[in-house]
Image (cartoon, rainbow, N blue to C red; front, side, top):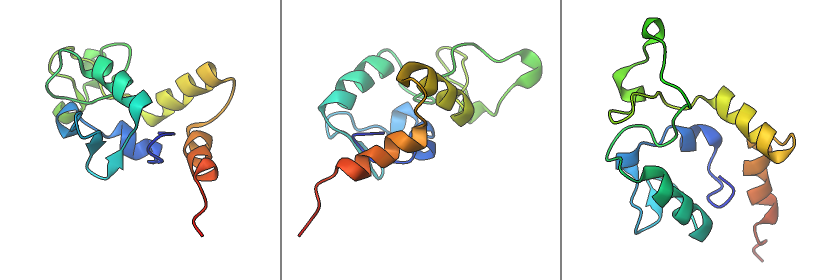
Length: 111
């Protein structure tokens, strides 16, 4: 999100098949070297399904829509709420909104 400046919702909605890894883009989202390395590792062995996955498979009673399930692992798409929680834990309390906003603050100002 920091490299692309894309909103968290747009990034979390990406599917593996939406990515053009060599061109470092997906639809209206583009990324740099750091994300390119991470994305390559993240999609290894997967050809379709949500890009970001929850840590566990959903309970049978809480079955999500087929588009939100990974066909290889059976895990569901990572929700915004869970992504926000995980990012806060890893970053010492920062939010996903602050991460995206930091990209805009650090971008060079055009004359």
